[in-house]
Length: 148
Image 1: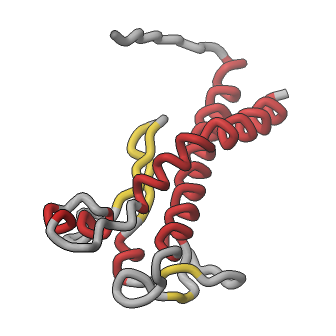
Image 2: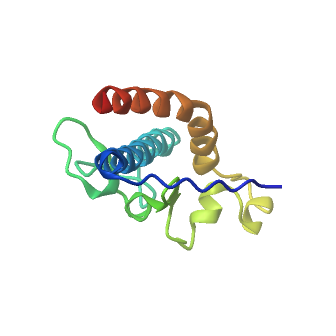
């Protein structure tokens, strides 16, 4: 059972505030995406950083160039990216990479081989669920200070 609440803020006072709140929510979602991608990088680098799955270079999350750290730029990691899918939801995906489900451990092939998967996305989801409240709280405090 869900509850839907529609609130209309109208008038000159609310136009400036509403824009700042919407921008703040966008920044919160982007911060969560970046934190998730960084954690995913850490879990992807943990098993064995080599081959097509991983390579080390100077390309960061979302294809951003990093000069002070080295992160994965292997073929699989290049397929992984995060994006907002709505105002309050995000998605970190491997774009349906053909061997992604095997690497994650969700392929039928995993049951017939010794390799059971790295569970990188599940670990990242669990980590985000544990840490998103802290991420949001600090971003909301910043937003409240900006709004006065």
